[in-house]
Amino acid sequence: MPTKKTTRTAAARARPRKPDSARRAPMPAYIRAEQGDLGRLERDYIRRKLGTRLGKFSRSILRISVRTDDVNGPRGGVDRLCRIKVVLRGLPTQVFESRAASLDAAVDGALAGIERTVRRTLQRRRKQPLKPRR
Image (cartoon, rainbow, N blue to C red; front, side):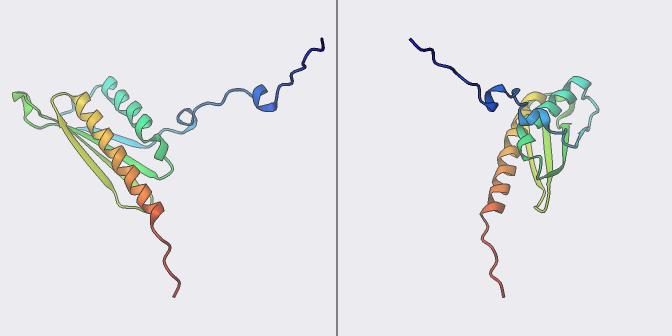
């Protein structure tokens, strides 16, 4: 019985590609805490989440600013505020803020909101009809 000879295509021989997020340069992000209570771990967490959520829009983003604040001070309550501002190339600046009891929850809420806002803004730009010539 003849054996079937298999050949490997060029795609099968090629090395696996890195995901887009691993090849991109980090986006310029400015992280600022009003109370000065953000440590290195919190800043690294915010940068990692920014890359995950907004990395796909990196070609349209000029810079990102993240500000955190403790609204009520030491009294407690729902008092952690995270405001994220994204400056887009050729489009209006987008801002989203979120309040929560913990810093991580406030950052996650603000990131989810700014991702939706940036996606919507970029989709609108692509859907606008061309202006008629005069």
